[in-house]
Length: 181
Image (cartoon, rainbow, N blue to C red; front, side):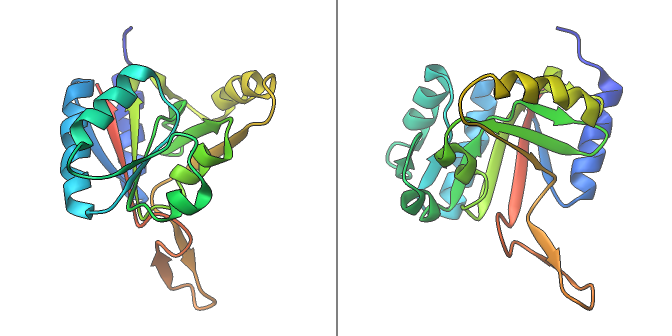
């Protein structure tokens, strides 16, 4: 599948502009190297959202002896005790520099919001031009039972009444997209 380099470049620029981190990877194995390195750095349990067997097995193998793996389908309490959450967004949105997470399980949604560090693995051909292109994905998800759609644009941040911005108050302090190009 051919990727649109302008879309990818815009996504990277805008995501980084909001305090997010983008690491370019050539393969899933390279992404696993970065996940392993981050897991060693944060030194705590790692939560993982629902994903295919190959990805889950790869994460389990890499983190064996390094960190306890929590999930998929873990309890909120277990996820809250994790230092790192790993998710697999449905899409990236170039226009806003955001990732779209579609979850069919509450625990999957919590993996991107409770741990202080969030890593999202995204393949560049899943980067959409703008928000309007998200609608068909959400419409398709709505055909399933319960689901949630979350748009994430970098680390959690809020501002007080004096407009001083604070990062990581209600969610991850760091959000990294491992972008397969």
